Length: 304
Image 1 (cartoon, rainbow, N blue to C red):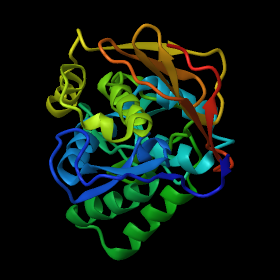
Image 2: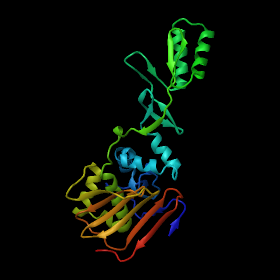
Image 3: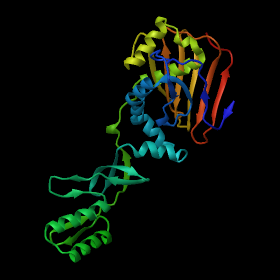
Image 4: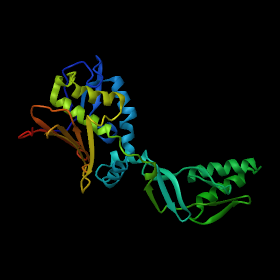
């Protein structure tokens, strides 16, 4: 089946599937909303939702693979790309060299900084304010200050210009920008593990509450946000092409439950629940990020 509005999986219980505490429950995005995910269900309490969201999912935006995928797909998913890329540090390159900055409304803005030689790097509009402040403190009157600000605005790029006897400026042209990947961090494997566990909950229903060791260890890992190596293994994979979709698939029990999580068509995680098996039909879910379409289907011939 195909949906063009947000797909919500109904939940029959009023207990959190992670901490097992009684409700009230709140809306949870299986794939983080910060990455464009829209599949939801109400099966987490507000405490677990907030803890996992703040400590795990928010950091997913800084994964270098996510940022590179979004950059490659920016023409197909401009809104989401803008949200993700504009929140991350960039580097601008000019004849002078490299300078840190960020992107705002599609344009690069250098970060203000003072250099060892006493000069200041600033965005052009901030530089006008600084010129005014510097010249006022030096005792200049209104007219020469206005002339200095006008000289800044009219100055040619990449040329040193004297705007006042005590002040020179260079309006550097940014020739190219790039993501500052030195500020990135690989995604915590508990993020895809959380997505996979919640997707299995959609398969298992109320059986997800069973207090058996196989499930208790997984819930404990999500509660403490510490990977339990003998219960969960997460393989990080990649495809050969970026595509504007997210997907989740329960691959079956071979010999344990395996869920694949795919982000931006390229970055993938195969989550192994090493002590767990889930019965019943297998489902696959995809979300087209460019059109908003969601697709959910039963996969034939479940593997056991």
